[in-house]
Image (cartoon, rainbow, N blue to C red; front, side, top):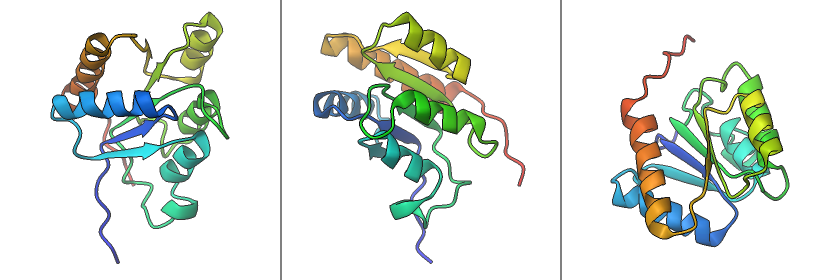
Length: 150
């Protein structure tokens, strides 16, 4: 059996520019070692729930943090969030929406579905980089998630 690496961050982002900026910001904060990238909502769900090309993963090996864009192809971010937070195996995973949407309806719906934080992407790299570094530091180093019982 192959030993699969532990993924600390699942980054769900379809924009190549935002993907590059986010990865660069995480690497600059020394948080970029164990990132998995999903480029659409369907791929994110396959990864999280160990289906399709990720069937060899164990669902117990959840990421420590999911950075989730809302405007995604195939399955939108709100549906991904709903599936994560409604499943007892994954509901404890911190999910941070990192999106360009300032729509009040998206914010309200995200919190109603159980998002842990909602961040609107800053337009300049310095602001974006600082936001990503701070959220990575908080969720990966400071936050104490509950221990899972098998």
